[in-house]
Amino acid sequence: MQVVVAADMAAGTYPIILKNMKLSEIDITNYYEVSAVETMLTIADNNPEVYTEFDEATGTLTYYYDMNMPSRTGITELYTPEDHDAVRFTGYYKKVLKAVIDPSMKDAPLTSMYSMFFGGVSQDPFGIYALENMTEIDGLENLNTSAVIDMESMFFGCYSLTMLDLSSFNTSSATNLNGMFFACSKLVLVDISSFDISNVTDMRMMFGGCSKLRTICCFEDWSTTSAQSSNMFISCSSLVGGKGTPFDSNVIDATYARPDDGTESPGYFTAGVVGDVNGDKVVNFTDAQSILTLMANENYESSADVNNDDAVNFTDYQSILTIMAQ
Image 1 (tube, rainbow, N blue to C red):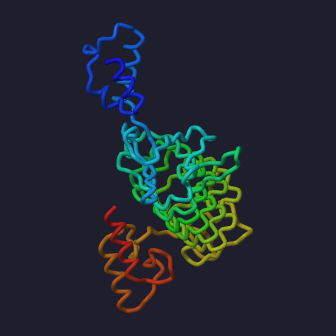
Image 2: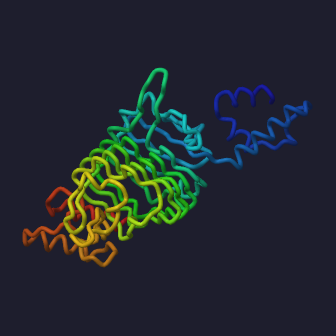
């Protein structure tokens, strides 16, 4: 029995075997060996982990919170945001086309999402492991953000993302948003309408380098924050507020971090929700019908341009249905 357990542990299947064993049935007299088995039983039963699995065939990176990491067939890595020197995705970062947040992540007790979608920087050999070809993230509503303090560099270097709907995020515990979207150079729209920045102390470079970012959906006025905000909007040259206020390279801190109210109170935010065509702050079938009406009359309204491609078409209608299904 002792040899079998050792062999199975080496093969990576020990959690399943140990869970089906009773200590009273194991004929081991050595106290320390019994203690080791007890320890492994405790780990197998009580310690799920946050980790990723990469499926090279589909280019999909999935985040899980469970005890099944040893049985996954793809490339697996632990996600340890407390270790700011950790380097991930080194052999496949350019192959990641899509990320998925598994529903199990709703139970993950994370207090940090530092560099969640950024693999980090290695010094020897030097390398920057950004998910530069990832075009979408599914299941963001499955992230439990209520206790998260640190979101620094969360989406850093996601060069190919074009849209992020973070309207499900509860950031009431967050203190650090430094560089959260830094260098998301193709991002055109981000919905942060649910964000609570009452405890935030650092939002420097938050949108820095988002050169194609046009719309930031947010109802709240962040301009009075006492948080550090230098270079918050640096290089956001495409940014336009909800009432037409253009980006001003001389105003790149939190001064204009508020809903746009025209010349009297210029801002970079749009007081709206992605997909809310009729302005009632919810996305439902009425909004989908509004898009069909606009299409039939060949009319354009910015609120109906869900994917920000300067047109109202069937893609926007499909986007509305996707948002409703979440």
